[in-house]
Length: 614
Image (cartoon, rainbow, N blue to C red; front, side):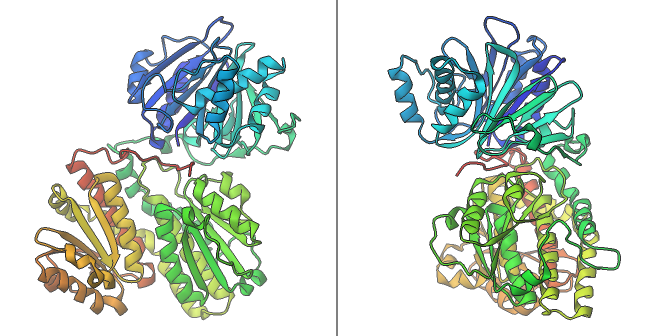
């Protein structure tokens, strides 16, 4: 979940490394460091605890360090507390090998004991120092080259890792290896780059290779080579991808925070995603998916695997697919599914949802489904990511880069892709009449404009957020699709305001939760589903009767003023697609409440954007 950058070329490396690390700050970190070496007896390693600015100040924005090759890292502590000693880069005792690492080495204690027996000293509490010294051990013992030393290390290492390494004997090269943790290699005109994610390199190039598991290689100038675990050169088999994101798409522009920028970008992101799959005449086209209609017709069941916000999008899809296509749907938390042992229906499809395409738990769930003979469909925002490469079929969201830790536009685009898939499946299985299908497609096409209308009504939400500054507990209640929206709204509030918020199906209130309602406790009730509105209003009245403060989020054609203290309204929309509008005020409420509490909404504590470890 941390960030890796690497550079070789003709320019000064340190400023480029620092720029890359700045673009990876959203991944979460507690310390940072860079290392450079040319034809020097000793490398230059600079590390700093805390924010990246500390490292930038320590190196005079990189200007005090001179070299044309180097590596950098932002660390989020797993093994060892966050301090300079545990910060990356780490080095062998004689500085022969220097490296940075993302991931977790599961057998590092075993490897550490072996190294100590061989005379190595371990100075930090990290697994990273251990794996770098294992590389050094094999390199020296067998008098072999870096690639062979790295491969021997990979064979003897269990866990996930992305490695960037520099060797004393190869001062102008940066070596890399990967298993489980994301890593890209990018090619410039006279330079090459390594990074954990695309934003780090967009300023310099959009030509990217995705490193596969158990591959290694090196960059030198603009030369890039890949090798497999046998040490064979496999460069010719690698495909270069062109990233269609613009470099300035990761800039803040006139905004103070990425989260606000990305909330406001949702109409454009939705429009781009819809236009990718819907022709002007309303016909759905899924060329990237590659699933035949015969296969879709045979489906009896669908599984959806995801984590966090993607899971909440999957819950919305569960209601839609079952309603429209008459297919049973089972939504599972990916982190739990891996350890479940229920029998999967062979006539089923597994849908996996991940913004980054690198979510470790989701990837593991997908591989388990494939192992059981189930075809997999990935819904991701990053082409060429690990999940998209391993999935049988793909549908992409066109949200563009999302930097804030709390997802907004990527989640909204996931919803739209799931709407379109549900309609496509329903039409393919003849569960939806032609006229009704085109009516619903037109409803989807109107969503960007309606989302814009909700976003522009932010003043009402901003005013309401002032009442959340001193709250410690907030409840969300809803039924059906509204319950799925509650889960996402609750997550947004808790992750960037640190308010203890909890989402419940409204019908569950009397089964225990209502005991927590007392004067001053806020309950946000989502009520957009006409067939459930009377039941939800009854639950709101129950809260109000116990002096709870009810905030109702509903359609502008529904009157809930007598059962709630405050109201937020969204434009009239087909109830099937209400989640796309209802989530906007909840995103804004979390954002403004975060600012009121003096919290940076882009970088909530203890969280990272891409969760690449279990």
